[in-house]
Amino acid sequence: MPFPSPLHPDTGIPNSSALPRRLYPGGKAPMPALRGIPASIPRRPRSVRLNNFGLCIFDTNLEQVPSKIFHGRDLELTQIAQMLIQQCAKIAILGPGGIGKTNLARAALHHPGVAAKYTDRLFVSCESATTSIEIAAVIGAQLGLKPGKNLTKSVLHSLAKKSICLLILDNLETTWEPLDSRSGTEDLLSSLTDIPHLALMVTMRGVEHPAKVRWTRPFLPPLAPLSLEAAQKMFRDIAEDYHDPEDIDQLLKFTDNMPLAVDLMAHLVAFEGCSLVLARLQSEKTSVLSEGADKRSNLDTSIALSLSSPRLTVQTGAMDLLQLLSILPDGLSDVELIQSNLVIPQIRACKSVLIGTSLAYLDNKKRLKSLVPIREYLQCFHPVAPAIVLPLQTYFQSLLGTYKKYQGSNQVTNISFDSTKH
Ligand SMILES: Nc1ncnc2c1ncn2[C@@H]1O[C@H](COP(=O)(O)OP(=O)(O)OP(=O)(O)O)[C@@H](O)[C@H]1O
Ligand SMILES: [Mg+2]
Image (cartoon, rainbow, N blue to C red; front, side, top):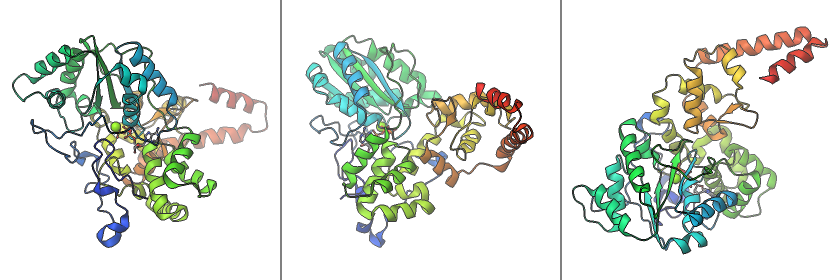
């Protein structure tokens, strides 16, 4: 069984990081050079091949079959397909890194109804682009245009001349995130969506829709982790059936059913077995799933990429809040966030940055939480400072003191009622 995936998911090109560890000299795959240092994460992934414009392009071969292992996204796929079939929809697939945005976009691309309506379909990876001009260059290369001045105009012209067409811009956050290229990216999207017969689908980390586009309603909700059932099926499809269900569930707890983590975990188990992986997780945490060379085969790299988001880094205190969440499996309510007098400036702005970048989310009780792999990564590489934890500790101690004082009396009911009300 290969580890993790023998082919690059978008290119179909054999991936050296997919080789089992024993195939590497010394028995260990090369570690990523900059693990755990978000500021140093390179924006450009390793090139696959260069196009005429000198940009790395990922093969977008439509003949390539969609992933055979696909679970738990039936509702989303149906919603996307219906929207695309009904009209030339403009859809954003949003959510955290590794949650399955690209996978879902590819499934939609190959959906029979979608394929029947859109014979012209372009799948464009924006990962190598740094500006909207570079995105236009990658689209231009796919359209077979020659490099030249005002390529954006040529691209728009060429798409306008086509008949009905579906364009997928994958990982658009690469140029949308940095403020200096955001406006250009939104202008390009706006011009693209002025073409009436062009359907547009973008995938982006985070939960925000780019401006200047009238996105088709209803919005697709940001992707959440898979259900436990879907994660179990995915795990079994990759790692075979004979493993103890209890071991599988224990391993899945560490992944929080985030597809990237489930995928890497299942491939590792297929190679090393459940007990060894469970033992390694105790001490090595997310590093166990981080032996590949890029974000698709290395969980640490994928998380570090999200931590390098300009939206996070420009907001003072947002990282402090995220680090605090890393030690709180149950997260924080709004009341706890405000009343504990945390020494984090603009705490509400920090909260919305974490939600906006999908580094945290609100659970069904409106508690602010982070997914397990993100928490484990932070505890390992960016542990929270004691000064940030102290006010929260004091707050909980005083709550406990109040509870003990009134325990057994009628008043305690009122106290608990009051604290859950908020
Ligand atoms: N529904 C699913 N069923 C089975 N496997 C899945 C599913 N969704 C995603 N995967 C697998 O999980 C991994 C991560 O998925 P994907 O690359 O689509 O995530 P992403 O959200 O696009 O990540 P990024 O933000 O880094 O671009 C891939 O190996 C993919 O094959
Ligand atoms: Mg993706």
